[in-house]
Length: 194
Ligand SMILES: Nc1ccn([C@H]2C[C@H](O)[C@@H](COP(=O)(O)OP(=O)(O)OP(=O)(O)O)O2)c(=O)n1
Ligand SMILES: Nc1nc2c(ncn2[C@@H]2O[C@H](COP(=O)(O)OP(=O)(O)O)[C@@H](O)[C@H]2O)c(=O)[nH]1
Ligand SMILES: [Mg+2]
Image 1 (cartoon, rainbow, N blue to C red):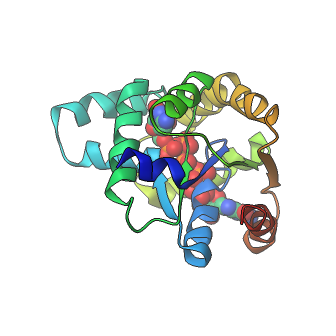
Image 2 (cartoon, helix red, strand yellow):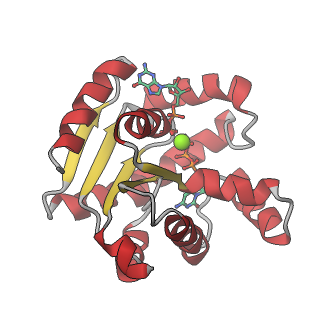
């Protein structure tokens, strides 16, 4: 099983909260049939289950902090294994959040072939999240938590991009443009993988 995943194409999708990662991932799934695994969605599913672990996760996420590394990684790995037979590739959305998460992922699962860096300005991200918060029902889409998520993004996650840039697998995507124009750039990066 683990071997099957090792040979699959792995794409990390990294960018600030509200940059448009989920939006682009949906479009990639529709065109390329990749398996989309959003680490945030996996965590929110655990919270929704009402489990004891879910309650602990909820408290961390509401503060805009990162949940323990092993928790997220185990969830991603299980979800990857569940799709191993049918998956053409994996979009790992919202992970790694810090360099250490990337290192552990590679030890336990495999190396990414590409990192899509979804880039938007801080003001843009805040605006989008506040708007999303009107309907998302997400406990962390409020101004106070958004600010903390952004701070943590710049501090912990941006170094991830520099780390993978050294390997030449980063494609920076300007997500200030309309969704379809952003996707046109994303398509080029995915097509290069073939
Ligand atoms: N590897 C990860 C992924 C997520 N989280 C936690 C902290 C995040 O604030 C929360 C929500 O994750 P999302 O990826 O959904 O959140 P984003 O802030 O990126 O927003 P978005 O849904 O807009 O991508 O889950 C975490 O601790 N570790
Ligand atoms: N203008 C514009 N808005 C976008 C784009 N991508 C996402 N959005 C909006 O920004 C919000 C956050 O997008 P989402 O995909 O959830 O971002 P994520 O937090 O990075 O997963 C959504 O409600 C979208 O409406 C884009 O490329 N252009
Ligand atoms: Mg998302």
